[in-house]
Image 1: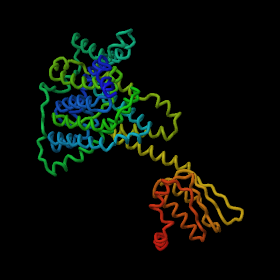
Image 2: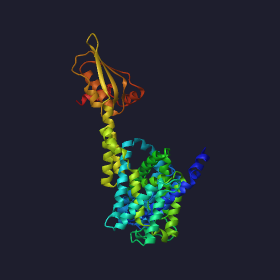
Image 3: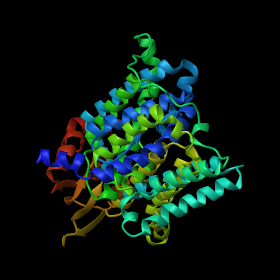
Image 4: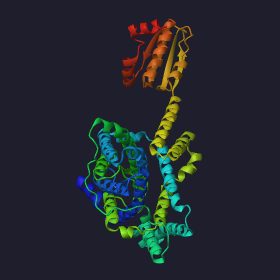
Length: 497
């Protein structure tokens, strides 16, 4: 079984994976250079990182077909560290980032993705699509008409080429776009911005580098906050991207293995003079839409990237940026969930609000972690509020008029505890009160505190109180934290009043 799945991951789609990996490698280069510039380091740092992370994650990652490399989300977290302490400390922070991510994998923190609702994922996707599109605007601002014409032609090729019989299904249209526009620009001598204008490309293979920093507590104090931030943001973006690729390919993935894989890849990048990275939704979408499904596509993307920048840089430098802009615009259009706009009117207001808040926070802060955190917190608040409404208390008085039975139905927790207590009438003259909890569940100490409050108040009024029907889980927390059946604790409570 293991041999079969391994063979499928690596050899199940050779042609599609190699072609898709080629497209991804071409799209990675300008982004890796741009992210290096954002972080304030040499372009080689981003390019070496993208090569190493892609190759390593292809082997050890938990999601076949997903692309990981240097990313903008990680680059923005490095700016201050590089500015104040230099590249060597960045490499040390990259190694520590990898260690934290491996620990997260062993702690099985990948399971936390189950707390991210579908509306948060949709908001994350939409925000990223908008950010990808916005990142292309500098290439389309204050330029000649040739750039607009080339970009429009590129989009035409991308969307129309697949309509051709046979060949349209065999060759990825983004690859055709890049090759065609490059030939047109070179043969016609069109003077437009190219990949070569982005920055100097490395002309040597990466070598093993141990960060030249003192191994002491002071160094740890400097790099620790950056490393923990990069580890969290990197894992968050990687796991969200894995979830999206799961949906695109109708397959599952091992999120905890992905955490460990990202950590190993970042340690590898740091040892080869590269910056920390994570999964890239844009390139992952390019990979999937170009036919990439297996680990081979990610491996080839990394290897071909290195071949291009080290051995084929003269060819690479003449690729017009307009061609790559067209590819990234295609990615942003394909990534955006257009149905979510229609669903704004169909879905519950709370669901739509979570999605919109996630989008707004990500775009406003340019930090995916902040947006997802805001979305998750808001979704949790809405869920807690909704669940609290399903808790109610019914009561009935016996024929003698001396005993009232309260029947509690639903979930009692911090958000419904006050509502639970408000259902009881403490001024009614009764000999006995029965609280039937057979259809209720107590979740936390707020709920236990509310039960104590109700029982003690009735006893103060002279009524005998019987609590019955607690399920095992509720009984455990009530016995541990409740005081209404512990005379010595009640004395403390009453003594305080």
